[in-house]
Image 1 (tube, rainbow, N blue to C red):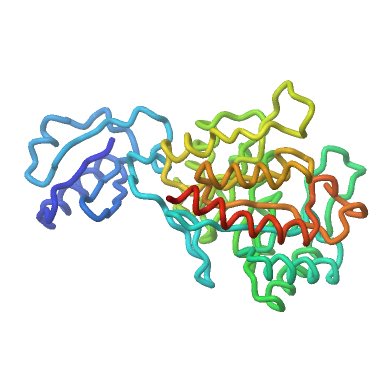
Image 2: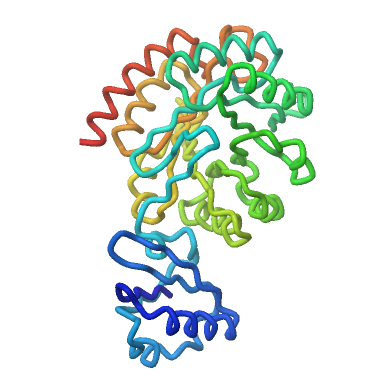
Length: 335
């Protein structure tokens, strides 16, 4: 349920209304916009007398929210959520954030070289995998803790925020100096992990699962938000269909649809979506024109020798060219 409050409503009446809701085990969440304040109610609202509520002097209107996701719902929060990193980098609300770097951290030299190049090309955040979930147990699983230490070291050396994937909530203490924690497609419905991430104060990049609907993605975001962490970034990374020409099928329609459904920022991962470096620029530009709030792109200084996903990685030179074209696409998207 959403209550739209009148402008300049009486604070004492609002405090009494808030206390009444909490007595019924309903938690109010406030969104203060330019023209109105919205009070979103999370809990069993079936016992609320809507007529009595609507008669209160401070209430402008009341709306029922039929969707199962509440806090992630745009009806609760009409204005876009803007997430700001410690260095001032913003995502959402017309700010386009570009994350770039290797699928997997392989060495300090490799990561440093790539970090310098993507930052020079305009990337806002360095991506790099330390813990790597792989289909085969015999494939390279990442450098794990050593990789995280290298990522933080390069972050401090180059001066760029970092994003990397978490596999287990027991690893959370290792992510203290990570700016954005990524939840991979395979863990989108790892609800215990999501609840633990909801209790930390870091932005969470939540990737859509291989075969999950947009509503299921938003319900996973709700798990995080219901624990108190509202800094959730949604990521469309391609879904599994009958098509075999690409690694996955990029659901570009997810961008405008999610913007209608939720106030959370939406990022596109064209690398995992296509699995082919030659397709990444086109899909990245399409995502920007569709209104995406960010991109996460794999870049490797020697894709042919990459330990993970070299076929979908751009070279630093290719990324630099794409970065210039992204600026032009932004002008089309934000006109």
